[in-house]
Image (cartoon, rainbow, N blue to C red; front, side, top):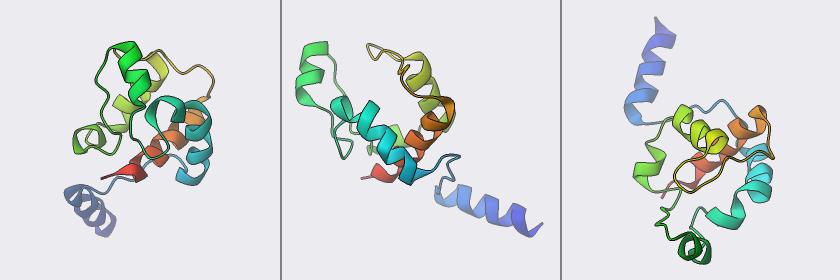
Length: 105
């Protein structure tokens, strides 16, 4: 009962308990994501211009509102003009999501 109340309280406050390790995720992010999404989640303007897309900051509330499953799908399957990231394994995907969650604005 107590654990259920804590879980509901965390969910109500918007705190996300990601499955991955944010510290390990920073290393993954830096090698697989940073060139397009920037060190702090700020999109690389040159990449956005080249791809003719509008990229949002990864800390944007709308981006942060996506579920971990939605983030995972975007990374593993690609989304829009973003191609799937094939250079990282499932654990690294979870870790990179956990790190990306730290980029909230």
